[in-house]
Image 1: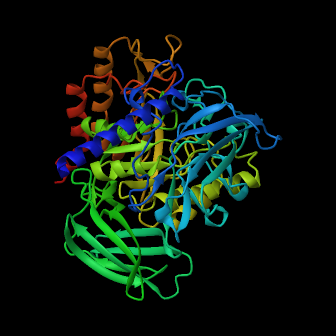
Image 2: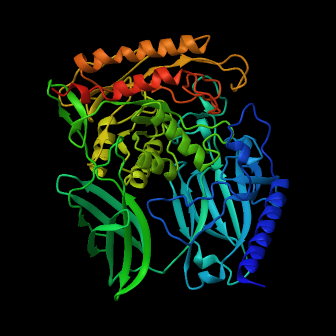
Length: 603
């Protein structure tokens, strides 16, 4: 038997096994009936649910994905660990979603339990075993083999536990997770999640909604990278934090343009050092160039750990143009930032996109429609969403998810939890070149202590802009003054040293039969009856931006919105992403003309 035939036979047997395993898993799961689903949802199976490495800016080769079928139970808050389970749930889709296979609400009076087993790869001996959670909403308690491994609060930030002390030496390992989420009955940051969805408020997400995975690392390993570009000096400032006792360890870093090394440097763990990037290629929406970065942890001349990453060289700032208007600056040049509001909801998965390709296509559609920016609205996405924005070239205004809606009655605990989750968001998203502005508050929702919060953000991150409040209540701090106007457009009064931006406008609606969450009683700011009228209205509203930009100093505009969401039908696309409602041959070149307007007016 020749080698080619043996290889073919091996591949054939492997494919038969995978096909059989897929069929067996699928028999235990199917999506619950839903009003609509996207085309990516139709391809979801338990063996390939978000199976790409979830952390593109700190990537290791060896890992194990724990997405797939888990057991679940919904029980009253004050009861103990379940002795039996309701059935299977597909992780990482939230329990309220169709793709979870459950589609049940939990509410503040109940808790959600998850259970599964796994085995440790024999090649992982003498390694520390980490379990990573992309995001779980909201309070998470973890047990490994009956031992409590930790408690985490926060619905949008990744967290990690070293579970090595509680692992059995051989055989199956047991994971049990309890999640409590008070929803809109609580004060925690939650964005637009409510128990009873209506108009601009949508179905809640409870429990695991991003990837769960295992990773073997050395006893001393790389824990976190912090990368800050400086285009004026041609530097990348790098801090590498480690896990374990790193005495005697050092860091080596290598920046690459494709396969060509352009910079190398060495430095201590936990302290800043620099890589000199000669004549750096600058990142922008038109040219989203990314350098590769390899980071090595070294001890006594030997490699202890390694991660792969990337970075973009760009600067963000505020400055005056040749006509004296204060503008948002990218790489020291005025840029008009124009893009849609994006809620980040999906009909099959709610907070969770059906697949990585679905996330990518949302970014591709925005780029294809001529936009250069997106406002990520009161939600934090998985790291891979920001990776696609970085790679494809899309500027991101990142909102902080809002919590309780009244400052007057805000408790001290509410304020502390807000600060904790705000810091976590900035800490975890800091390295993405596409993110250029933080938006801590939207329209007064949960707004409090604004000046202190803005100063907190500025202290944490000197490299980006801050919008103190998008719409409504401006406190005179931050880098922009932001108004909302429906249908608009409009421009806020010019304020010295701050750029004038239109944080929301538009809201033009059109229901598309067969692609709506409900057949009737859909909601929009301003409704239209057909595609032709909607396109004409969109064109008229966008054309009105031009004199505001040229003669009133408007520096950015955010159109509401990218997609329909549940009963809200203001989207450029339907909720299932099947149809772009406006005529793209009309709106795409129009959008591009708006984005380029300052480039064409530099004299």
